[in-house]
Structures are given as structure tokens and as C-alpha cells.
Length: 289
Ligand SMILES: Nc1nc2c(ncn2[C@@H]2O[C@H](COP(=O)(O)OP(=O)(O)OP(=O)(O)O)[C@@H](O)[C@H]2O)c(=O)[nH]1
Ligand SMILES: [Mg+2]
Image (spheres, rainbow, N blue to C red):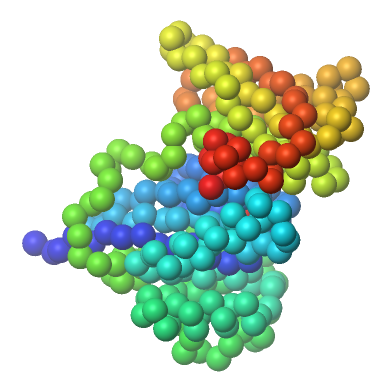
């Protein structure tokens, strides 16, 4: 019998490289939220992919962030930790983006640690490759993939599986993630808010599910707080006569119903909490660290 392999694969790359989209495409389900805005992902999230002879534990990470805030520092630490603790690293680079010093430094760090590394160019369906600007072959095996069409994914998954250590499955094969449903629901609300809100409010926004009532399975009742940092942001998030919060709620509810495979009643409240992004204990409670 062929041996079974299992291990953690860290998905690394710049903000907006397509890391969360890749994870969702592999899992065939929206686990990690995706928006056109860079710096969407805030916390590590594990997605579990089962093959016949391997279980791949993909760790989505935030893109590397600049800035002094506790939130930014927490994000960068998560990336460092993921790169340190993984069995295999997968570096994603948008094919329309150029290879940079940050990529080279990361590759060198992983090589020094002896971590197997794969690189993949993302968004291949867009056909705007700048691959000539990538480093000469030899840095790592390179794939070209599209999360949108699925192109290139099977080959990449096979290569990654073969590089994992021999091990029985580390999670039951019915598990999709290591994160509780409450957290996934909060993230879907945050995604809807990112999509609806313009300007820079999204980065001042956090979502906390405060009630998750499944006593009536035919209608799950969920209440969530949208935390913003200033009163002016609260006005914008609520909108004229509540129009904005209503749009966010409708959009989020549809996604949550897809995740839970059932009907959902969703109530959203906007609250001002000026320092949530600077307080480590709040970041923990919100599930961002
Ligand atoms: N056309 C196309 N667009 C893609 C593909 N993959 C990702 N995108 C788009 O690229 C943008 C960023 O995708 P994300 O998956 O959120 O990127 P990320 O690397 O997780 O970004 P952060 O979490 O901010 O670090 C979104 O608008 C996606 O829809 C792809 O294969 N094809
Ligand atoms: Mg992401």
C-alpha cells in the first residue's frame, strides 16, 4: 500500500496575490474571504484538502503589511510564524506583478531552513503575464495557475502532496477548517462590508458575532456587531436611513446561507470601539491573532 502523507503548507505572498482565492478554489468552497482590496486576510486560517493518499493542510496568511499598529504587527508575526512552522511553503506571485526583493529574501530564508518551496504565478486567466521579469529557473519549481478557471491546480497539488512528510491524516476527513463556524460567519460579514463600503473604512472595521442561535434549524438566528473606530465611520456604515447596513446585511446573509446550507436571520449593529485594532486582547477575542 502506498504511504500516506500529511502536513502544513503555508500560502505566502504579497497582499492581493490571490492566496485566499487559491485556497477557496482548491477546497471548492468559500472558506477565506476575498475582495479586490489588498490586505483583506487578517488571520491565519487552515483549509483541509483530502486526496486519496494525502491530506494537505493549507494555511492562508495575510499578505505582508507595513505599519506600526498592533494589528499590522500581529499580521506580520503570523506570516513569519507560518513560514517557520510549515512543512512546505507555497509562494504565490501575481503574474502581472514583478518579482521583488521581498520574494528573493523569503526564498533564501526558506532555503536556509530546508523547507521545500514551490512558487506559482497566479491569475493566469487574465493573460497579462510578465513572467520574463521573474528570476531565472532554479529558485523553485514554478507553476502557473488560475483560481478562477482551475487551470494548473491539479499538477500543483500533486507536486505539493509528494513533498509532504509521511504521516496519517491529522484531521478527520470531514473537517474543512480549524476555525469555528462563528468566525467564518463573522468573516463573511466583513467581506460584505468591504465590498459595499468605499474609502478606507474597511481597514478600521471588525466584526464580532455576538449571538448564534441554532435552536430552530430551519432558521438560524445570528446577531453581529460591526465595530468601527470613529462616530463618522458609524454614520457611513449605517448610511442614509439605514440603506448601507441593509445592503451589507443582505449580501452577507446570502453568503452565510450558502455556508450553512439553510435559511438565516441576520441582524447587524454598528458600534464605535475606538481602539479595537490596538488592543491585543480584543484582537484575540475577534480571532485575528
Ligand atoms: N481573474 C482572476 N482574478 C483573481 C484570481 N485569483 C484572485 N483573483 C482576484 O484577485 C483579488 C485578490 O484576491 P485574494 O484572494 O483576496 O488575494 P489575497 O492574496 O488573499 O489578498 P490579501 O488577503 O489581501 O493578502 C480579488 O479581486 C480576486 O478576485 C484568478 O485566478 N483570476
Ligand atoms: Mg487573503
